Length: 335
Image (cartoon, rainbow, N blue to C red; front, side, top):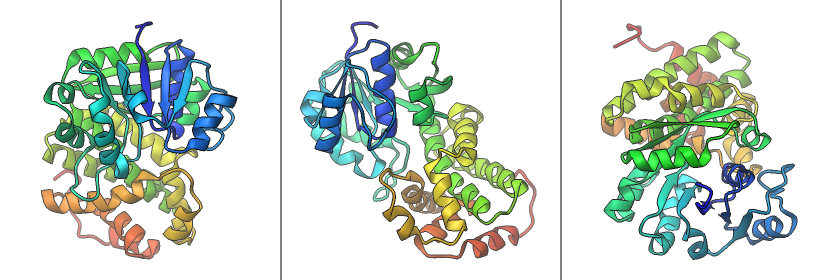
């Protein structure tokens, strides 16, 4: 794997952390960023103070705003926000090597057509390349990966060899990668957990206690499983790293942007004010709309996610949202 050339499309915190991890292993990495000032700082100062401050970057990392240059790699990690990914893929696809392995590390669901990242890749990549797509998801705060703290993650693909290639490329004593074949399930876990994290943050912002937070996480997991099964995912996937693992991290960790958004909503701030002051994207806000519409389309009951949508996009008072959840008709836990 030493001769493998990698690129990372997207120089936000997670993209930069992946590039830093690979660079530290001696892998040559081309890191694509939209912002020229980010590229200049990475190349000249070996740092990304905007998105991942405090972590020097290896000389193995070269940044560029040239998407064609970045796409010319053996393994291409795709780490851009879900709402812009289609446009970036369209501009990138003609420059990809015919044997490249594409790794999707984007967590979200498209707003306009309600597609998962893999479904967008399926439409835009040649069939062979789409089959080799690997979806990377799990409990991974970018800062902790950059610190070299122990991390485990899942690489899912319909092509076992592609998943194994990514597993071997990323794994070392700091990161343990597991392979899987449930692409939709792994992706969905990474998307739904951001919305549930907002709900858990709202509960914390309202000072509702640990009982309420645990209840929201658990009932959120039930919603994740129901939608996952309706979309063809395996129920067992959601008991793994990309399901309950990522959900626990994002709904309880202080580094979680989505939990932070929820806490500020619970404390009385408006969504426009919160998002206006954030440089990085909190995917759960956009995903809450997609989930609300996707659940209706699939006929899946997702009351926690629905209330997050109403708070984020319809201005509903968080206290009223909690009251509605607690006042729903009584039923069995598993139905």
